[in-house]
Amino acid sequence: MKRDKYFEEFYLKKRNDISFITLKKGAAVNFKDKIYITKKELPIPIRIQKLLEDINKQDEIDGITLNNIIDGIIYICGTDRNFKYIQDYKDMFTELNFEFLPYIIYCINNDIKEEDGVVYGRALVNNEENEKTCFIYASCLENMGMEHHEKGNDISQYFLEEANFYFEKCLDYNDKFSLAYYKLGYYYKRKQQYIKAELTWQKHQELDDDDLRIEVIRKELIQLKPYVDFENGYNLVLKERPDEALELLLPLVKDFSGWWNLLFFIGLAYRSKGEYDIAETYFENVLKIDSVQKETLNELGLCKICRGKYVEAAE
Image 1 (cartoon, rainbow, N blue to C red):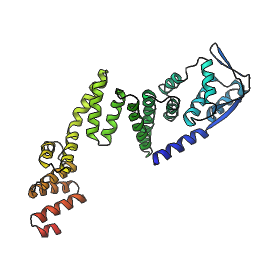
Image 2 (image 1 turned 90 degrees about the vertical axis):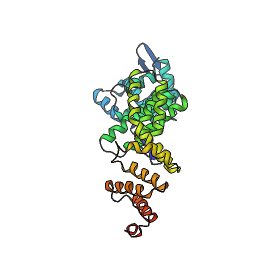
Image 3 (image 1 turned 120 degrees about the horizontal axis):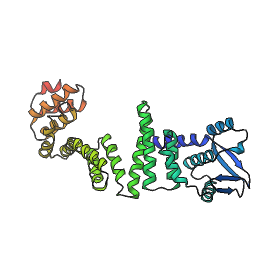
Image 4 (image 1 turned 180 degrees about the vertical axis):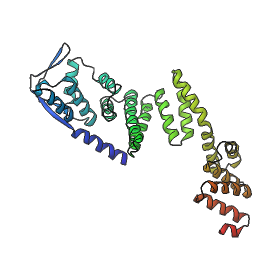
């Protein structure tokens, strides 16, 4: 998949931005009143950009801050989950009584750059994958995707598709995780999967206890209803159940008369009922909206043939 290849290259590039500084055996790392003494030489990942900033501020690299060390470790966890020293870093944090995962979440929630947020979010998932870490990572991907979308960058679709994947993955771990249903409804709606969006949001309404989100989705469901009727209607047309389809589709014409898809499927329903004159009218209205709609031209020609209008059909 193009998306998989994109993220493989994305994280490889981020991995290549990392440099290393070696802490000698017996070196001390301080955090509050705790001290960690290295038991062996330990390569410490540092992002090159932050390393250069640090060198500009300090005379000796030995004066590197714990924040720079932590940032580098987060980046290596996010870009290279099998890096051989990750367990050593975890042991260091344990001895320092430093809460690594809460710190990552804190950074993500406090004005971190969107691109850094994606790497930080992946570090969470690589460390421990569950519904909460998947949700945080998906949210980071979504933020990055929306930033690219606002700039008109096509790669936004990769981030949004990956976000969709991880929001769905939340439910693999906990099928009662309401926030995932909240988010996924929007993704399915955007993909014009209206029935799926409705079912997803209905599930959200059953599970969430946040009054504001419940009200937001209640309004979304009301707005979604005609689109759900349309999807159910055209599925009935395709299943050759035109009468049931028309019960759903015809009431939509009042508000959606400019929606050629709707008029097309109504035309199909009447054509399947053998009411070719009515079908013709709907197909002709489609062509007023889109004069070169190929399927409609074919269907209109078929209706004319069935009515014996061979010359018009040929035209």
